[in-house]
Length: 416
Image 1 (cartoon, rainbow, N blue to C red):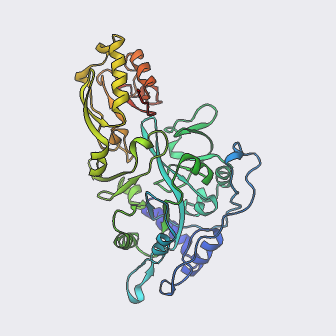
Image 2 (cartoon, helix red, strand yellow; image 1 turned 90 degrees about the vertical axis):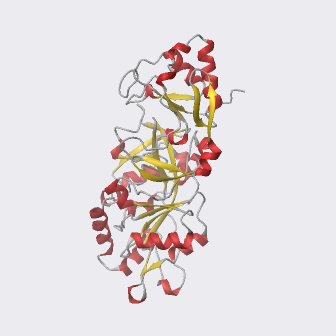
Image 3 (cartoon, rainbow, N blue to C red; image 1 turned 60 degrees about the vertical axis):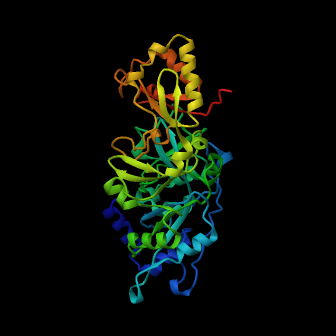
């Protein structure tokens, strides 16, 4: 969220004074500090609504309690903290006791918060952020248009998915209104105007569990009248810089990426087994520096038919080798040009974005580059394509914005 937008929303939440903010947070179900920081631990979030889910829900098996009507409470979204594991009661107690400043200038670091399950998935070669949220709590952090969009929150509660409206031309939705998330197919209930820039799609807790999201492994924070940067520094000092990846949301919106900060990827779906826990630091120029320990345990260099030496994810190599052997056995080796191979492992963002490329994980490869540029039908031999699909690869030529040189792991296949 841009800085000006954050200030507007913070001012709206603070117009009646900080004490009113704290009371409103408890009334709305958002976490909030209920005591002075010098008087002990703050209170816990209020319970979720018990109203029934929408009667016309398309997925009652995944429905949760509906959020009820919006009560007008709003907060800014300043920091997103993500952990590899669920936050413990002790974690939350320490977070909510954070203060900044000294003496009379001492301030609470967290005015309001909402816990959520946070993860990442890939589709059509792009990387997206997904959150399983409590609709009644989380809506207060998403901007006025989104918070007041009642149908959106009812649809999430009813077992459908809300996708940020900025992604309408990007995230593939089929003719029946469904989107594939990992191995699941979920109906799109709303195109959301929500303004939390680090989250692309929202589901409820039941879907979060089925998708394999780690429950309560993230917390969205409003720092109230305290500086987000000052709060961040206290959190990093208290927990260590590698306990959480912390995203300053105003920086993401204004500058594109929070350079030099440790980030955590929590994958869901088919590629989670091949990625595991992925930590990286943005280093500028569209590049990232993955955790060296992850690189040592996941990235290997081996010989494969036709292409020769390749550096890829160790989970990809067996099925890549099997696909290329079959290409050779069918007499199609000449259809893959070794001198036009553009690589596999390349830790970077997708050009012009802050979304990770699957090349960052060593799970994608590009070949026959000159005749298979983006946005074209390409010259890739279709029998070669079918062989790669059989061996667990998705092909970029099938995407809405085609990338026919590109193949990436869609599922792990054991050649036996």
